[in-house]
Image (cartoon, rainbow, N blue to C red; front, side, top):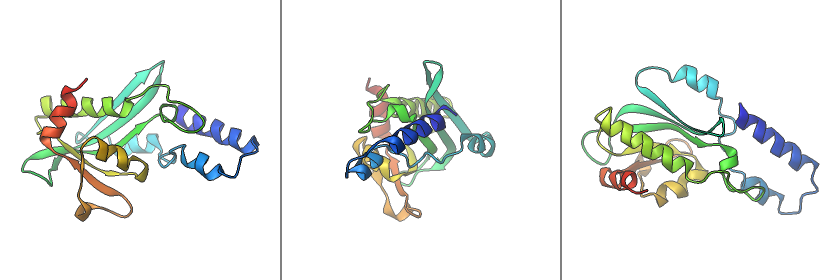
Length: 173
């Protein structure tokens, strides 16, 4: 996959450099917590009717992907929402100390698309939940999600977005 090739190039480049003492800061800025994800295996495992896949394609390559599971009972209200199994933007769309994003807003656009699909096509109430990678926790808080520590698993924090916040997110351009 192109994402793996990108990471390989970056790490080969870093290996050849004489990195300053703040090398750990540079590596941490790369947001690589999901680099081990095997998308082929995920596609084989998440292919039943309860899963929907969303891709954002540009310049003949995937810029981001979102996989949702439905229905999922809301923890904040009555009714069903969807659960995000995976949300990832391509590594070249992430700011780091080595590069600027090629495209901004990929994750947000995928979320808006998933919310619209879930409410209009699946007839779920607006809102969704997920377990977040540490690197994404700040983003989820920024977009108005609520952390429910009672639902955390292992080192992944559980977040849910309420219906009114989801509706506002979809309506903004």
